[in-house]
Length: 376
Image (cartoon, rainbow, N blue to C red; front, side, top):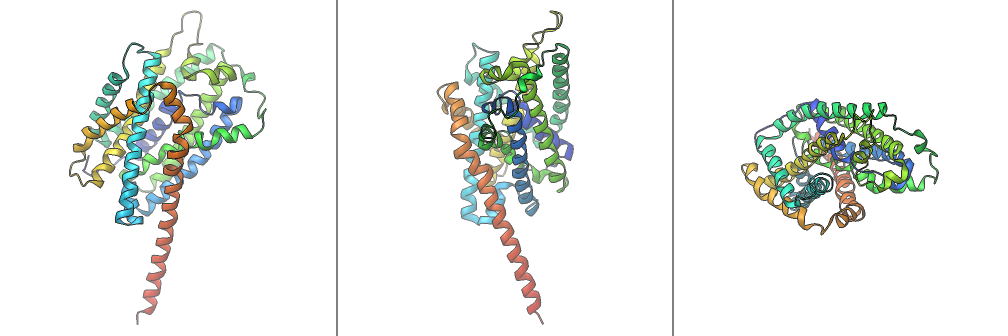
């Protein structure tokens, strides 16, 4: 993992799409906005693009540096390392949260008799294998996964259309309760999850084969992902209704159970299982990779693969200890994490770093111009 790795623009696009859509599509995003949830997602994707633009501008100022190195470049060795350590912990924690999401998802839907720790260990073995193979191998795998997920989505939508289970009246009336519920559902929850989580790509962008691909590919990929999530939200509400969408733990999984074509085509849950397993792997891997890379840089480990095992141990243990049950886990993810973790790490700190970096750049240019004028 230490050698110079490069990824193409299309691989970057696939990673962003799978990261955003892979697991987020399973949940009832912005359900507090009821039938206007799609509007909250539209606004969330807009704010997400603004955040991603901030991350991209930081990358363009320091194109060869990962985010944890950028903090040291801007804030100095000691303050920068302190911020980098906190981000390393953040990456580990979110990887553990995503692993717990994956564990609970499989236990609730398929493996009811299995333990969380067994599922968590099995998933981490796969993630560790991917980490040892490296980012380039993972990026190539994402190209295949992208087409696989796209085909599955088309199959699901096709069968739902043939089954005629869409009820467009479930989307009406638009803005029945005004803008307040929509704005409340948008910020901070929908903005930070899933769109603000693209902070992980500040650790991936230095591996792009061309610097300009970050903006040219990254923003369109996020917009496309947002449109797909909006589409999923619209179709889930049309199938389940507002009350069904709010009550369902995994609306996409519930909606697909409504498919029944001539009492022959039904029980298509395995397609959703494929999406949840692949999506869980992609998301956990990216946060895990960021945690491994940042820890190796901070502690000056020659081979970053040497920290794969201790980081994976921390992720598995943290996923089990962070909440006593699934209800507490979901409550923590909705009421605590967005406010006390996502807002500072996704919004405040990167924005402040960008402002300081721009000021430093302007000051440096000004001093160089003054120095050039003073020369005889």
